[in-house]
Amino acid sequence: MGELVLAERRGGVLLVTLNRPAALNALNLELLRELGAVLAQVGDARAVVLTGAGEKSFVAGADISAMAELDAMTAYTFAAEGQAILNALEALPIPTIAAVNGFALGGGCELAMACDLILAAPNAVFGQPEVKLGVIPGFGGTQRLVRRVGSQRARELIFTGRNVKAEEAVQLGLALRVTAGPVVEEALALAEAIAQNAPVAVQLAKRAILDNDGVPLGAALVNEQQLFGLCFATTDQKEGMAAFLGRRKASFIGR
Image (tube, rainbow, N blue to C red; front, side, top):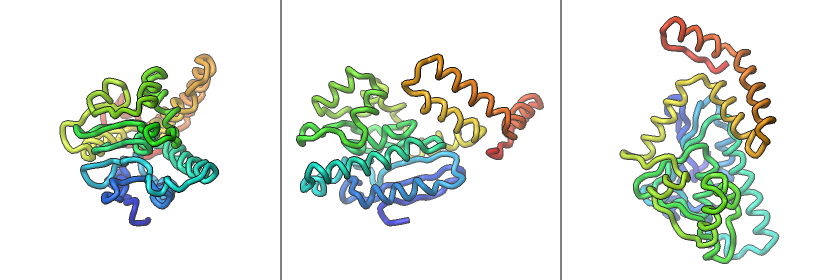
């Protein structure tokens, strides 16, 4: 991989670190493309933890110096590429956890929201301040924030561009919790706890949630039934139930 995105296996978990600390890990095309390359090669990892290098910033936003010279067409292309990479992150079959240390503003907030779960360090700060720069969120913020916190609260945050500290982010439902210890370590512990479960079942549970977003309840329940049935074609289902009945710990192989 490149130097802007570092990937390291920690047991069954892939730790991905955005590595532009001098620029507060601001997103430019080079970093985004490196991230996309890493996401395409998660291999047999059972979960991903995503964080930013240093303690000051997860991602302070998109790189304003790079965006300032864009015109309407190149801005459209930039948004399209950024959205495609965040969509790929959201669509990963395995669970993803954003370990937010410091600023998660603009594109950083959008990146965190493309993950399944968000853990916030006590110094975490979230926000979509794009209107203060004469633009709107372009990497999915107008859509994912609504899905996280509801339409009215998302409108208030986007229209005002105000920042939200860690505790309020939890109250709003934007983050799962504020960590007591180092955010990356707590995210890795949570990811490892997830990785101990039957991998296919976890993946199908994520698929049931993502695929049925916005689908009418009746159709969504039918889809859930189908995915539930698929579990019973796996070795892990047989192992999990046999282990339960035998009062022993299950040994899942991901098939």
